[in-house]
Length: 175
Length: 175
Image (cartoon, rainbow over all chains, first blue to last red; front, side, top):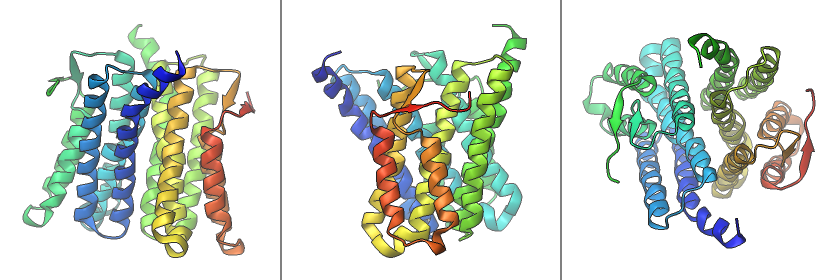
């Protein structure tokens, strides 16, 4: 591989690292109690995540490095960040210890889903609900958390955690 | 691959998920302002991370799934959790915005290091300082943060972030 091709390969990774950057900010903003901003950062990560794929296809570059990096960023932005945010906004007060376990389980199911998907190398569809969808959906719910009953949140976390590690086939959109 | 061999392959992954679980707790405890506990959880993750490798060697099982999962858990426990902890304990008050960027850069360098190492498949040594060392070292420093000048922390984060993505060869120990 020449030096030049490595550089073009790296362009989508800028967006992938943008995904991680906003996921990291989401965790910091959650700590500061700015929950809507934190949810907004997770949705920014969704945008970055869709951009890296689009840019990679546009440039016709797809690298193993990019694929590995993508998963490493996804587990933070769509596994850990939404779980930490949901725990802090609702679960801590309503469920305490069990809420903590549920939030951790969501992040762990997200990691298992990503590890499984990476080794299967399926390109025609997703196996289990994608973590980007699960994390993005939780961020959207948090934006409206004051208008929704709190019980929706642990149920949504549990259902999405299960769907991520399930073997249901989910069609790929927007290709 | 038979059902039985899949099950034995999965045993080390219990420890790997333990690594992620304690890393997740470290982030939650950081949010609650219990910094020594948070640092302790990161060191528990180091223990879990060394256990999964030992168990995998003992059982003579090594799976691509386990390898993928290991990196996904490492980026949370040794990239994101120590960065969030160091930011909250010291950088937020002393460096504000720049501290936030430095903490994010540490996590991002950790992710790049893991993605690079996974595709290179080097088994004789590490390329760049391992993220487990970098994250564990920051957790140890945080345990003694009241006896140390604050400036050590951003310097340590920056040096370790650089060493993770550097190409220095680090010998593997304890095999």
